[in-house]
Amino acid sequence: MADIAWFENALGSFNPARPSAAPVTAIDTARFRRHRTIFISDTHLGTRGCKAEALADFLAHNACETLFLVGDIVDGWQIKRRWFWTEAQSHVVQEILRKVDGGTRVIFVPGNHDEFARDYAGRQIFGNKFGGIEITAEAIHETADGKRLWVLHGDRFDGVIACAKWLAHAGDWAYGLALRGNDILFQVRKRLGLPYWSLSAWLKHKVKNAVEYISRFEEIVAREAQMRGVDGVVCGHIHHAEIRRIGDVLYLNDGDWVESCSALVEDARGHMEILHWAPPPATRARADSPAAARPRAVSAPAPASVPA
Image (cartoon, rainbow, N blue to C red):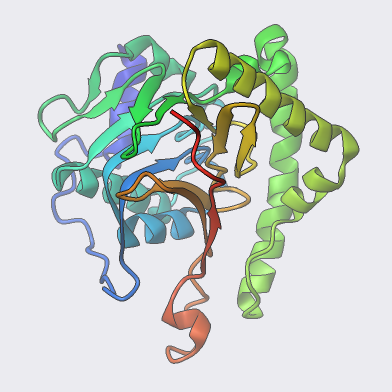
């Protein structure tokens, strides 16, 4: 029970009374988008690499009926080593709670970095007091056009995670170093008024073994989805946003919020796309500049629908 109590305190910005007077984000209706469903994962709250400003901005400007939190939302591995939390990360929590208060169904599918929450599948964070954030090990989501999508984090298909957890932690430490370099570069480019660019993502996509791993992971997940008789699968874990057909299965990965700042969204017709959301511009940017006028949202459309 101690773990889930800690998690509730973290999500409540360490205030058990729930921040009722949280700062309200001014919404530009021209930038506001409505979706049937939003999927986000790998936000890694509690780490320096989390692009919390971009994530809070995305959540403030995108509404949905259902929000899936597809794992690694809070980075329990990092927090156990060293505590790190920012005001921007608290804003992310507040935006999620605003959606709960507004009637959005929020479903949390824990990942390997927040695996402590898996022991509480079937329960609700905050209980009935705030409408509840549902916790489930995995889920089946039915799209507006009738496709059945299997939703899970995806770490169960990572051989390193499954077979050698100590090696996974070592890899996480090395990845953290790469993200620190990312953060330094991000701050420099932000001060210069340049757009966001991820050094770690560029390196990952240039390394042959990493590219092969991503491809292999996607194929294994799609194969398991086909064996389960679903039309598609939604996952995270590998920090690589993607929509593609693998055999008869629609493979969808919602990306992450430490490198790509991406989310998977479904519209009222069941169409799926990936949105890349740029971090907010530097505060010193001119208010009338294009960068200050709106975040850059780049859509990656899905391929043709999977046959029923």
